[in-house]
Length: 158
Image (tube, rainbow, N blue to C red; front, side):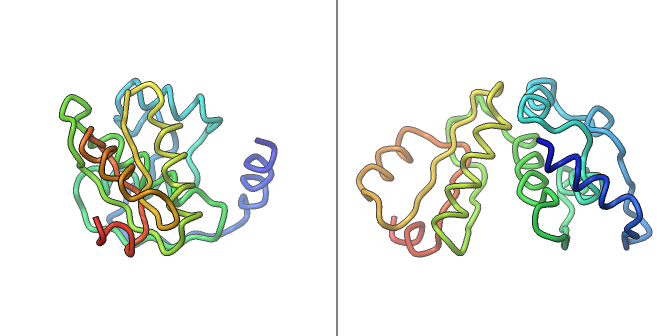
């Protein structure tokens, strides 16, 4: 947690380049997020959205195409994870989002973030990566996963 606060302090004097039509939303409460998602965000330890979260969550939720670039550790994974979780219909037990990652480690990390942020939403998320039992992947997918995080090699094999 201390690392996040230090990062915020370090970024106070950094200038951000943003497209003119992009609104900056300074708090998670002002993003129009569902209550159970907000609970997950605050339980995860977030207090205030990072610069990329302030600019990208709302446009992604609105269905806009978004290209965002930010330094490592600034909340990119949480940005798209929050956006995906906001758009899910958890009453429908089928895959609604597919996240492809270049490495098994990143796919697994994204799964953990989705599950943590969606902790109060009863979200199902499975990581499909090489080096694991493909039969287990198929069983989990048959059960119904709202979000699938995986590597291209494994995802395309299933």
